[in-house]
Length: 138
Picture (cartoon, one colour):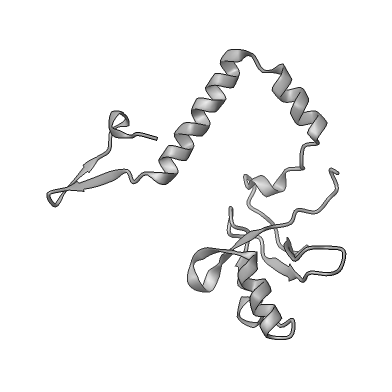
């Protein structure tokens, strides 16, 4: 499992400066006899936006996916650089956590999720003011 290449369900589309889903490319390829035209060379890692991705169409044995072109690299801190953890290893890690460590990790995840879905400021009467933690309800 450690040597399994990473595949991507979404990508950074350079021409539109946004994250897109693989379904967009798959649909485009289907309509254009397998040609991915405008997406070719414009799909990058959704996290680091440096590694160039290529489209691998659906076959009878595999789903459509994107993979990194071997000559391109991810940024040093990109999570796609790391190997997948096996289910056994993940279970061992979770089992090793104390109650307080689990609570800390859950709190951290909730904070991260709330931050992603809430703007840092709100507009009250045309005046922008920071949203404080006490005003955020998740």
